[in-house]
Amino acid sequence: MEFVNTFLVSFVTVFVFFNCVFVLALRVRDNSIVDVAWGLGFILVAFVTLAVSGRLEARQLIVVMLVVIWGLRLAIRIFRRNRGRGEDFRYKKWREDWGEHWKRHAYLFVFMGQGIMMLLITIPIMLLNTYAGPSLGWLDAVGVAVWGIGFLFESIGDAQLDTFLKDPLNRGTIMDRGLWHYTRHPNYFGEVVQWWGVYLIVLSVAWGWAGIVGPVTITVLIVAYSGIPLLEKTMMKNPDYVQYARRTSVFFPLPPKDIRERE
Image 1: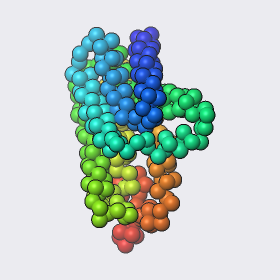
Image 2: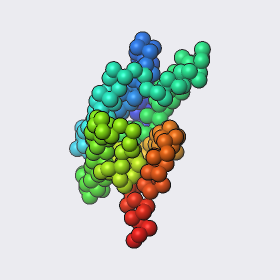
Image 3: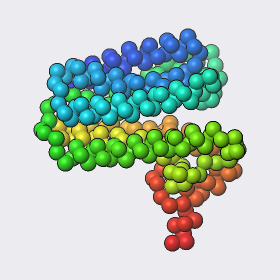
């Protein structure tokens, strides 16, 4: 029953948050602002459920801090990337495809859809902020280390891509350097790994195992639904990217295929 109360509070928080973002998107005619709001929504859920719990344990503080670091970095990067560019091409296409019903479809599919995903992904946080746990142990250390590896992949991958795109000499070429030499999506890989790290930390509390819904949801969302598949569909129209894809792992970091074959 305790978790039900935490979930209901989270549900109301997410519902109100995404409704506010939807209204703002209508005013500025830019549905892609939901990408900026994505990371901020997780921070909001983490703080609200922490406040409702009435406790302040070290494990809770660690996870909330990790969520804040991840969410703020992501939101700031996307805001800087999108500033002055108008609506992202994906949302533009959806607006055109939906025609006169674009507002209804945007509300249900883009905003409420992401709200549902957020609720599922934050279930580990809800569990952590519902049930008391033992003192910090080795599993917490492993979880933080795994999260750290994911954060490095995501942040370094994003930084390498941003630097590559800013150089006019790279225009029309494919980014295949640094972490991108080993995986076509180091940032997505890093994001998924971070949530598995959070899950390892939450395993120490009662019912923590049920939090597996969170990392599984973000993994499926990125690997099989809206992350990699949508981006790959667009990029595969470029013959150079097709060649890059043939030699480079789509998700897990691995040596390029030609190197593996020689070995």
